[in-house]
Image 1: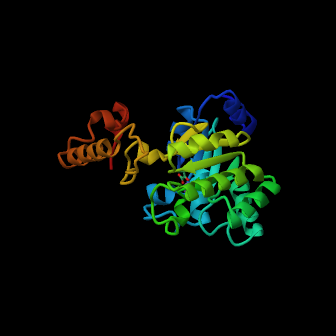
Image 2 (image 1 turned 45 degrees about the horizontal axis):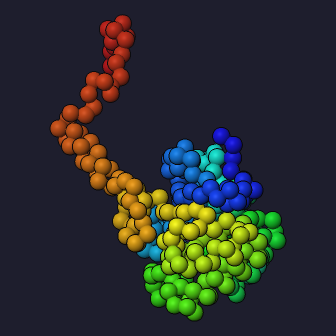
Image 3 (image 1 turned 120 degrees about the vertical axis):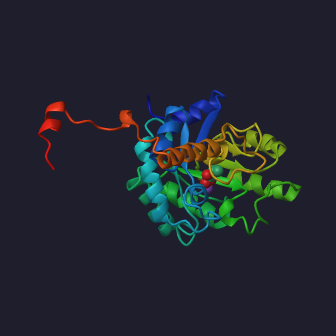
Amino acid sequence: PKPVTLPGLLALKRERQPVAMITAYDFPTALAVDEAGVDIVLVGDSGAMTVLGYDSTVPVTVDEMLTLTKAARRGVRRALLVGDLPFGSYEASDELAVATATRFVKEAGCDAVKLEGGSGVPLARAKAIIAAGIPVMGHVGLTPQTATALGGFKAQGRTAEGARRIADEARALQAAGCFCIVLEAIPAELTEQLMPSLDASLVIGIGAGPATDGQVLVLHDMVGLGSGGTAKFVKRYAELHGPLVDAVQRYAGEVRDRAYPGPEHSYAMPEAERERLDL
Ligand code: KIV
Ligand code: NA
C-alpha cells in the first residue's frame, strides 16, 4: 500500500473524503490499525493512561513516549505516524520544543508531532517546530495536559466567549502552518461554524461533532480494553476486556486441571532416538 502523505491528506480534505485517525501505542496494535486502513496513527500521550496506567497524561516522560512510539513505528506501514509531545517537553523554550520534536522524528521515525494549545506559548512552539522542518498537528478545545486549568475533563467552548477563544486558537494554528488541527470536546455547532475558516489545515474531531474533515478516537476506549473510555463521544466498537479475562481464566483453569498442554501442544522424539535414550 502507498504510504499516506501530507499532500495526500490535504487532497482528501479538498475531495471531502473523511479521514480516519486512531491511536496505537505498541507493535501489535499498530499492525492492526494500519492493516485496518486508517489514514493517521497517533501515538497519543493518552498512552500514559491506556497502556502505562497513570491516572492522567501529565506524568508521562519523553523517554516513555519514545519507547511506545518506536514500537508503533515498527507496525505502521501505510498510515501517517504522529508522535504526541508530552506535558513539559516543549513549553519552556523554542529550543526545547524543537529538540524534543526532533527526537520524535529522528529516534522514533515520526512523520509529524502534536502539541496542545493554540495561543501564547504553545502557538510559539508550534511555529518554531514548523520552522525547523517538522510538520505539526495542533490540538484545541479540551486539552488534557492542562485540564486542571480548564476545570476538569469537560466540554469546552460552550459559552460565546469560550467558543470565540477556541475559534481564535484554531485559526492561529492554521495561520502558523499546522497541517492538521484536532478539536476535542466542543459543541457541534461551534465546529460547524468554524470549519469554513479552516480551509488550509486538515481538521480532525474527537467529540466535536460530524462537521470536521475526519475523526480520531483512543483505540483502547473504542474497543473496550482497560478502564477508560467513558466520555460521551466514545463509541464502543468492541468490548475486548471481557474476552481477554475469559481467555486467561480458561487457560489458568486448564493448567490447574492438567487439560493444557495436550499432545497436540507437545513435542515428540523420533522413535529411534527414544529407544537410544539413556538419561
Ligand atoms: O493522546 C491522545 O490520544 C490524543 C487524541 C485523543 C487526539 O491527544
Ligand atoms: Na494527547
